[in-house]
Amino acid sequence: MMGLAALPLAEVESIRFSGPIMITILSVFILGEKVASSRWLVLFVGFLGVLLIVRPGSATFNLGSIFILISVLFYALTVMSTRKLQATDSSATMAYFSSLVYLAAALILVPLTLMIGEIPDAHPSIAFLFRAWTMPTLLDGIIMCGLGLVWAGWTYFMARAYSLAQASVAAPFEYLSLPINVMWGFAIWREIPTLMTWAGAALTLLSGMFILYLDRKARQTSAEPV
Image (cartoon, rainbow, N blue to C red; front, side, top):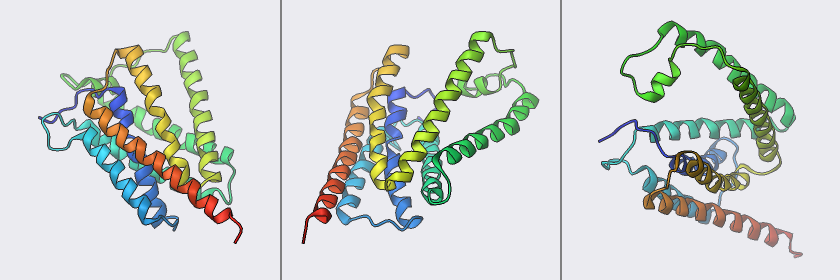
């Protein structure tokens, strides 16, 4: 039965592996980048890996997976914007305006949550968003400032990466986030990924690594003297 139970962190990150797939597809239609037929085949294998993790139509399907995929689509569109703007704007400028958009969204949404108030018998994830306001402690303020600095650094380096390299080349490096999130999921919540999650993640990871291999081989071929 479909539900909104909390997804393990490793499963969330594994679903996010569809990001390079979406980025590569959008790079063709939006940026006009050329993608070889062999790479399309590899991307299809990666997509099968995502299906193994999400398992649509099964008894274990979680509706939260759809929301993660939607967030990945918006992230892919952000990458496309970065590639479009890299010719006219610096990475620092793009990171600044990216953070500004999130701040503007927060200023709009926070008053709405305060007006609605707490929702009885709501799912924990919804109840968290609409819970009563409490003044942050000094420790809370330090943590939020630290997270802000981390976020600012992430947006800058991500913009820099997609400005210097083709979207379909830079995207597979994001697969490195899986072992990091598996570690955090186990350390904080004692989460252990299921066999299907590992299988799906392995397929998407291998597809990303093979894309890197194809790109390296293509560059070596083009660099050889005629």
